[in-house]
Structure formats: structure tokens, C-alpha cells
Image 1 (tube, helix red, strand yellow):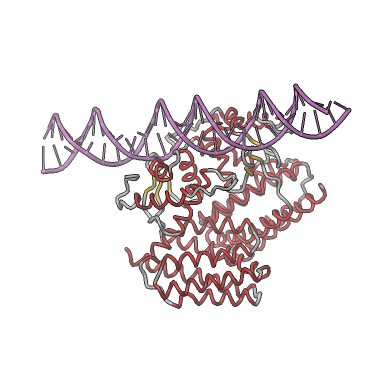
Image 2 (cartoon, chains in turn green, orange, yellow, red; image 1 turned 90 degrees about the horizontal axis):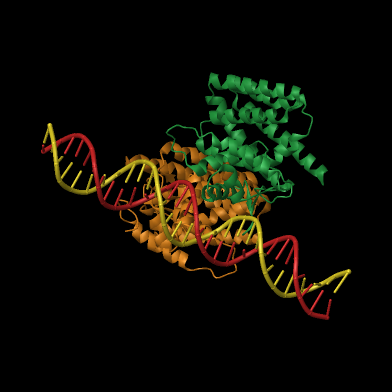
Length: 242
Length: 242
DNA sequence: ACAGATTGAATGATATCACATATCTCAGTC
DNA sequence: GACTGAGATATGTGATATCATTCAATCTGT
């Protein structure tokens, strides 16, 4: 056992981690081990491979990744500093269980920042990015048909971040990424077992159209609507859980 | 010598650090060493004790703080991840020299987020916080009279963050703090040697009034104006330097 | 049988050590 | 005199060892 969490899922997760990391990317990269670990953990969080409340231990992950505790601890610390993990004093790191208040807080900030990014993206987006958006959207529709939540969420992430990258602001991109890291586990948990419906795609369609027409305020509106919709759904489902 | 930077200021800075940290805060705190180091470095960055371009070394700071390299390395890494320091591979950490493009980028994001925080603060701010704002403002005026840039900047920071804390969003607060960390060294450097003028206070007066009247959009406007003004001044001065 | 004390295992934090690499210094060479 | 390259030095990074703390299971006394 790599961790002591009650759900007992971490061994499986850890082995997934291990394979993810064991592709050493044999370029001349200046990539440090802790960066690799950090990136792997980010992806795991974003893809919902960790459940809220699950505990992560330094040694457990170090074994899973096949590295020493040092870079793992530093990656965990960085995630904790960003609010993506909760660090309990002298205990373990934990995937945070966020409250509905926090969800709403995040939603407000996301709406402001991602809306701003979308508006900016409308001015600068290139044809290639628009095509990329079309493809991501097509993937989402297919995922809905197959009821494949994982593929849906991956395509959704790709769709959004293609837009945000197009905004050309490194600052915005970093902050938005940090926000997604926080909401990711909870979002993905809730999406895991539901039936995906076509309606979820409306806001994306609107965003796509607005970006194509280079209409900044419409693009903003569409993204904000998407965030609000998902957030409302999330809050509703969280409410039911209690 | 604790570092090898050409300006040769780091020894003095380091000793200032040392005294800052050597007050061990003998509470039962769960505070870790790396957190203490991180906080000290944050404050140093915010107060302009480091110049853009200055290099910081793990071992140098460790000596200055009287701790082992480990917690220092982790604090530096965290700052680098937040964009408050630049990490040069197998070289040293460096206080970033930011471009005017980055300044404008930061300014846009700051305007959106700090404006949002001010608007929210207008709804929720308490009488006690308003008094705190008055005091901070009075300190700023006194600092202008004395031409004391350091006191001015400290009071300015206190003023702004009192507002942002009043907004009641931990998410916003963290992000804004991160943005200030990035802009801090450059901002403080430029303010160090100028003659402070009364006009700098206008936006703060307007913000204070708007918050007192609980007028959210006016409060937003005032804060945005303050950011834009300072940013324009900053860009102008940076332009002159070339 | 039960409540409190105790001990042992697990964990994160820190210190120390080892290593690869980038930069600098300064002979030696053309 | 300028340049090249080997060695020295400084640096961040990663691994390992040790420590303090926490928590839970066990033990003990009533």
C-alpha cells in the first residue's frame, strides 16, 4: 500500500502515475524531477483520478513515481500553496473537499478571469486555434454519445484552454490553470457518474461562433454562461449529496 | 559574501533577513521553517528590499536565515512557481526584470481582480476596516510630507489589502497577493527615488469615500484608476530608463 | 467491561551529503 | 595578443538519514 487512505484507490492511481512518469522524455530538457511530478499530479487532479478527501503521502507517491521523497514533497508543497491540496500540519496532504461557498467563490473569480480571457482571445485568435476548437467540440459531442465522461472532460479542458492560451496573457493563463486545479477533483467526481446531455454543449457552440466573428463581448458572455451553468449544476449535485 | 551578484547588496539584505527571521515567534505555531522563510522573502520583495535582477542563492539565504538549505530551496521554488522569482537552471534564482509588456499584462489582470474585490468589499466592509483605511491613508499622507518612500509603500499595501480582505474571498486574496509579489520589486524600485506628490492620493480618497457610501461600482472605478495611474507612471519611468 | 495511559507505527520536516552542470579562471598555444 | 580548453568553483537538484509529531491500537488498572 502506498498510502493509508480509506478508499484504497491510491495504489491503482499510483501505478497509473508511475507509467505516466516512466516515459522519461529523452530530450535535452531542463525538466526537473519535481516539475515532472508536479505535472503528473496536476494532470491526475484535472482528470479526476483523485477523489476529494483522498490522502496523498510523500513516501507513497515517491515509491509510485520511483523517485526519492524530496521532489515529491516539493511538488505537493507547491500544489498546497496553490490551494490545490490541503496540507494538514504534520499529517498528510489531502485532496480538498470544497464547500459550496468555495465553489461559488471560485465560480465568481473564474467568470471574471475566463470571461476576460475569452474577450481578449476574440481579438487575437488564429485560424488554427479555431480549427482546434472545432475538433475539441466534435470530441465532446462524440463523448456525449458514448457517455464517456473522461473523454468529455478532457475535451472540455482542451476547448477552454485553447481559448485562454489564445488570449496571449501568460499571467491570466497561470491563474486560470490554478483555479481549474482547485475545482478539478470535485468537478470531475460529479461528472463521473452522470448522464451527459446535449444541452451542455450550447455555451461552447455560442463561444465558438462568437470567436469566429471576433465578437469579444459575446465570447465573454458565452464562457461566463458555461461557467455559471456548470457551477450551478455542481452546487445542485453537491446539495443532493448531503 | 552570501551571493555573487554584482551589486554586492545581498549581504546587507541577508542580514536584514536574518534579524527578521531570528525573532522566532515562540508561539505553539505549526509554522514550518519554509513558511517562515517564504513569508520573509515575500515581505522583502514587497518592501523593495530586493532589486530586479538581483540574484539569490539557496546557500546564501540559508546562512543568512540560519537554517539549512532545504527550507530555503523550497521557499524559493514556491516563489519561482508563482512567477515572483525567475529560476535559471543550475545557476541561481533571480528577482525578475519585467518587461513593459508584462507590466501591462499584470496591470490588466490587477484591474479586473482588484476592481472586483473592491466592488465586493463595498458590500461587506465593516466600520473597523474603514477606520483602518483612514489610518493607512493618514500614514501615506505623512509619508509624502516626509518623502519617505518606504513608509508610503507600506501604507499603500496596507490600504489596498485591507480592502481586498474585506471582500471576503480567500481565492481573490491569494491571487492578488501573487500579483503584487510579481510587480512589487519593480514598483518599489521606481518609487524609491522619486518625489512623492499629493496627487497620488486622489484615487485612494475616492475609494475611501465610495466604500463609506457602500457604492460598489464607484469603489471599483477608484481602485482601477489607482492601478492604471501607477501602472502608467511605472511604464513611463521604465521607458525613460532605456 | 471500560476508561485512561502508553507505546509503536506512520508521516512530514529538516539537515546533511552526493552529484551534475554551468560559469569562471588562467595557463598554454597558435 | 587573442583564443582555447582544462581545471576550479559555485550552484541547484536529488537522495538519504534523523527528528518531532500525530494518531491509533494496545495495554493496564480499577
